[in-house]
Length: 114
Image 1 (spheres, rainbow, N blue to C red):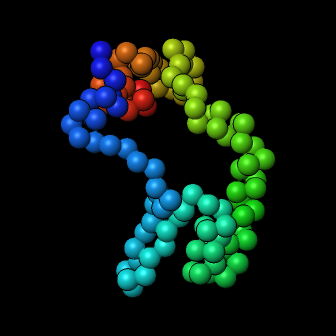
Image 2: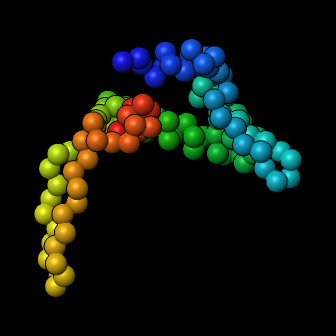
C-alpha cells in the first residue's frame, strides 16, 4: 500500500516548511503573522498590543517546561478498545461503538488521525 505522502507527491503536492506558518487578516486590513521564532512572535504580538510579547514568552516558557508531556500527548495514539460503561440515570443504557484504527474513515486513517 502506498503512503499518503507518496500519493500526494505523485499528484504534484510538495510539502515545504516556512518561516511564517500562519497568519490572519483583520477586517481593518491589518494583519498578524506567527513565525517559527519566539522573538519574532513576541515582536509581532507587541506590535498589535504592548505587553502581549512578554505574555507570549511566558506562555512558551510554560509549554517548554512541560514539553515532554505536551508533545508526548500530541504524538500518542488515543484510540481505545475499552469504553467505560454508561451510568444509569433512569434511561436505558447504550453502548458507544468501539472504533479501531482499521474501522476509522479512510480519510482519517490517511491523515493519521484515525
